[in-house]
Length: 156
Image 1: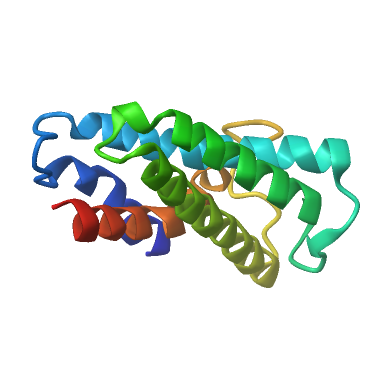
Image 2: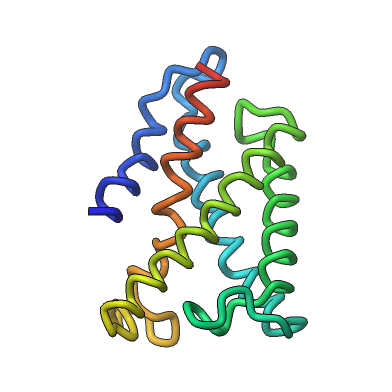
């Protein structure tokens, strides 16, 4: 339910009526998916390179504070650099990217906690080494509704 309901906010970005941004909402979806997924990758990379302190050792022992901070800041800066594909200013794009990277991290931790509670190691084996398809979209689950509503509230 979480995945279907929450992730459905991502394509809902396509129907927002943003003044001066007509017929460009696919770019907004690109911005969202790019920033959230890049944040996941960068958190992993920063964690492997610099990680020492686990954020939530019992839930997800491989997630580190250094990975979280490095990946979140780097992905937010990329989001600021992609401001031109959005209706946002560079500062607003950074803020939106920061919001969705933070929510993406929360989504990843929540889904990891659910998996641990249910005794499931991976959601699937479609993407070997990545924990399955559901692990690719767990960060989208929490980030999609937040991004949709922030965009709707401030830009429509």
